[in-house]
Length: 468
Image 1 (cartoon, rainbow, N blue to C red):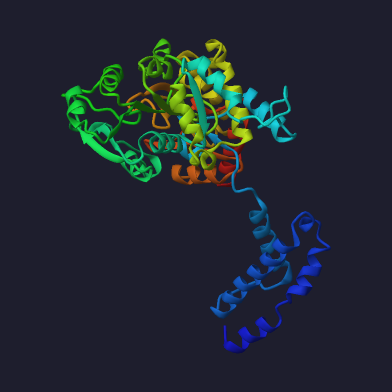
Image 2: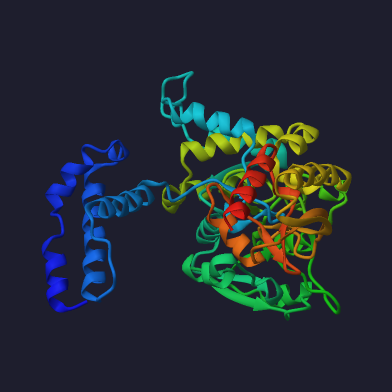
């Protein structure tokens, strides 16, 4: 393309005002804000100008520009946070939002969100109330703690507790418990930011009670235990039981705090899973403060929950930082509804999605796999090889680090498309479907596929494989 040709095409490009008038006559632009249309028209014209100046063959017709602008506008107004079908088998998938909420929680969120609420009002007296009262008594009932408070996440809970109890003093912790979780959250970093001084004791694999005792000084403010929920050290190891550390703390007049990380209200060993320390166990051992997450094994919304002795929790509630870390009314609504289900453990297992997916018997997984197989086979059987594959699911969310949950997956190998291309197309579909690739096959794990999603998966597979 010669320079005169480029100049001629550029000169004939329609103006923004003219294009904007054309969009008013096109119903496809009807629900798109004018500011978005204007921005997308400018972007479309800019792209075409760059192509022309680069000498590329370009369709500069106004219809093409409008089509480009419409595509850009639709993408721009589409919600960035969208629902996803999790077919990975990872129950608490951090990248996919961790715990699914139970129906009671969803109902309560909607009820509180669409109306005014008694968030900080005592209806009986008409006086100002405290937002945490909605869950304080309930958490204490379920854990045996004297008092409780919830903040925005467990990192915030740990930070707030450390800042309240031990700011400016030494916090004694085993080297084997200086954990890091996702997002570069490290216990030593949080401790430093909270104003505490880290005092490491023991070694990575072995720490004894005498190590804590020998570390005590006039400036010791806290003994801290951190449950290693996302890794496990085996072999020549030793650690100090919480009850023994509590006994030492009482003897030395030093408070004891335990961060459970995931935190659970039920004994998972009853359902064939490895034993995890329950929150009630930690409270019963006499810890002054216990912290744990709301959106991991608890199966609720993102929150950091602090339970413990009343005088200690009262001090935490008075900390000015509590307001900066407090949770909102929607989280409180979801958390209260989730916690109430734990009054009946059988009901909690059935109705809290996280618990249901973690404890589902293998025979029921096989039934789900059969249904998914038949649904998919009927639609794409001629376009792909489909078979069962016995594999393992993962709990995720930094919980049960070594646990493999036996599962029966559906393995798909397309006949006219690469497996990697299928995975990409499934991920880019709406709703996005996230599976995994193993042994050059596209794997769908029914453990994390929710009821009714099988038809969506099959329909999406059909559209992708027909298009090729």
